[in-house]
Length: 355
Image (cartoon, rainbow, N blue to C red; front, side):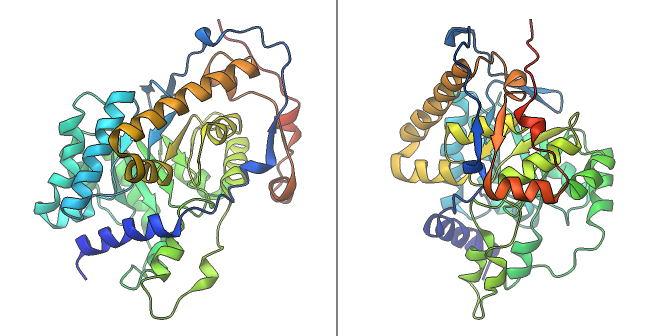
C-alpha cells in the first residue's frame, strides 16, 4: 500500500470510528458567578503562543495531506474556513511530501488559499532538522508541530518500531528551525514527565493530545490481521493530561486537543490551563456533512459560544479564563490526586483582573 493510499484510509477510518467523548472534561464544572459585571461586547479572545497572537483560542488541528486529490480538497476547504474565521490551521504530517514531490500541492494549497494566516507545519519525531526546515519553508509556516505517535506506529502494520533518539532530534530542531516548535501527542495524552523533557530542550509549547478523541489505535487495528486491542483504551484523558502538565509548568504554554467537541469543552480546557484548543475530528465531520459553509458556520458558532460563557464567568480575556474556578470530580480527580496534584488549586484560586 502506498503512503497516499494509507492517508486516504486514515481519513475514512477516522470518520467511521468516531470519537470516544471520554476526555474527562465531563468531570470539570465551573463555579458559577452570579455577578459577572461584564458585557459580551467587552470580551477579548486573543491569545499568544510562541510569540504569535491568535485572534481566537481555537485552531484547526493537524489532519491530513499527502493523499492525492482527496486530501488536497480537504486541506483547501479547511484553509478557506481558517481564513474566513481568522483561526490558525495545522496540516498533517508532511513526510509524504518530502518523499514524493507530487504530494507537495496537497499541503501547499493551505498557504496558497490563506496567504496571511497562521499556518503550522507538521512532521513526526523521526524527522531531521533539515527535513523540519524544508517542511516549514514549503508552507511559509509560522510554527512547526512535531507529533509523537508511538501507539499509532506500533499498531500500524507497516509502522516504526524504533523510537530511539527522538528527544535529541527534537532538541536539534528547536535550536535550528526558524519558527517556534510545538510538540503534540496524537490522541494518547502527555504526562508531566514528558512535558518536562520537551520544555527542557526548547519546545515553545506542548499540545497534550489527550485520550478521548480520534483513536489511532482503533484506526490502525482496522488495517491489521491480528488486532492489538489492548492499545484501544491506552492513554491519559485530555482533562487529566492538561491539569497535570499545567500545574507542573504554570509559566509554560500548553495547548489542548483530544476529543474536544464544542465550546464548553474549549472553555473548560482553557480553565484547566490551555492557551488554545485544537479541533480536528469535529471539524472534519462538520466539513463532510455541511461543506465549507457549514464548517465556517460551526466555527463562528464556537467563537460566539465561548464569548457567552466568558461573559457568564465574568472573565474578559483568555488569560482571565485560565484562572476561572472549576471543581474537578470523578475519575479525573482520582487520577490527579494519584499523580500528586492538589485539585483545590483550581477550585479556590482567584481571577487576577487585567486592565
